[in-house]
Length: 408
Image 1 (cartoon, rainbow, N blue to C red):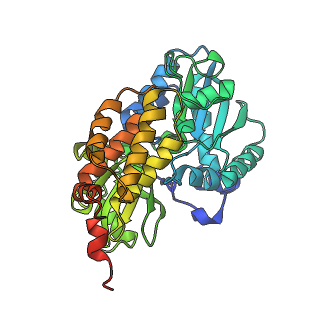
Image 2: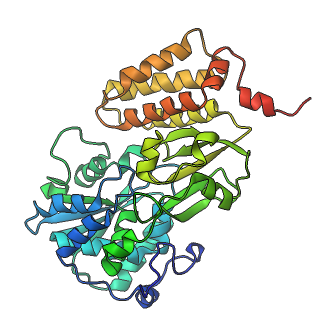
Image 3: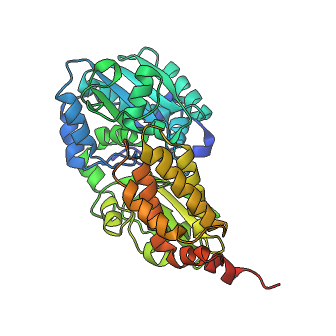
């Protein structure tokens, strides 16, 4: 490759938006949108970076087979996951790569419009995209920016389409799916920001180049957002990099963290012993009972309580309910309240048993995946912090925090 073919190549992210002239000088002209790009994406094995990890090439095939030159492209930059910052960083610092990916999708799929769905609170990202559109001059496909509400469920693909169509950012629970009938009833490709940036590079470098990156079964690189570390923030890793390696470069000393939340609020807790050797590869993580999700790596310091951290997440998830079904409205609230009672040593007899029973009753019964994600995160916490949950249920507090508390 003759260009800097990495997501974080080029100017430092803190330097702000890369201008169009610098973007073209670094990467060259955008290749024309040829139909063969779909086959290239399939061959590359690129997985979506929005959380679900669906193969990008297959998603494009589904829209292409239905498009009658009337498709729509929805660039999903809602990024409502509280622990993630990667998509807003790309929109702010590399807006022309985002536009490159969107324009390629529009050209290949015969789209008549591109919608940039940007989180309302991502002000710098929106400004960079507006400047980038202005720098491009007249585009072959109309582009508009729609501000996504500051709500966790607003980033779900059917919720995004629902908001663009009707101003209601809640997931739709019945077919058709967006690839069948989305914006204004047209086949709609909903693609995460980072996914389209990878597309823009693969179009230039090819599938063999992309597969040359990475250390594990899943090829390529990915952005991760690191928190709970002295040197956190957005990093680019080769897929297959181990959690312990990210900990080391992020300043997390051995023994300073006792657990890791992988994937975000829809993710899974792993203990330090479980996590450190695990490759950050979607397939390897699945085998370990975890998920890559939105690329979140959040270290829990050794002196912080895992029960309390889990209760905080659940409180947020219950407050962010789509309010469309009983499992979400009542089930998540009961789970959040009970977990908080455990965390504050105010639980009553059998609360821990109730929590275990409710997770089985709620899972898979919601109108959307919101309650499922919260329950899966809770179940992983109860496995990772089992002794602490039991200690809190007896009103004794967290064994980890107690063991590390300074002597009086």
